[in-house]
Length: 186
Image (cartoon, rainbow, N blue to C red):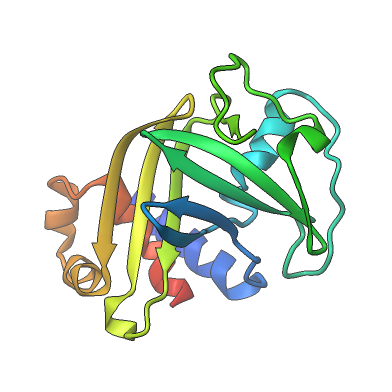
């Protein structure tokens, strides 16, 4: 277990050191605009849509800072994850323009698409005026439904990063462990 933890940490360090930071997707949540972290790992939830459905990816890279070729705007309504908009080179499109569909069309909210194809953990961050107030947001999503959410402030992160290996192995949550990659980006 210890070797796996060190391997994952070293993988995150090497990836962060060599990669150009990507322009993040946007998540609108509780009147906040969060930046949704995307990279080669983890990809944007929109990338997973095309991959899972074996659909040809319709976007081309704009730069090393946006290899995805788009910025997706996501929203959370009543604990459900929706794709609201896709921006390509500054032009805004509704998801339907790129044939993005829900697998089980429920009542759409403002023509947004329920992202019931997506399951995973997304990491978002917010930069506040006071650097000490920065926070990381983690959403555990299963078939488009938020099943767990956690916020880690910079102060909490510092406390967690000083935790001993024994503390980590005793049960710090997955979200806390994945925040190691965020330390490298700040």
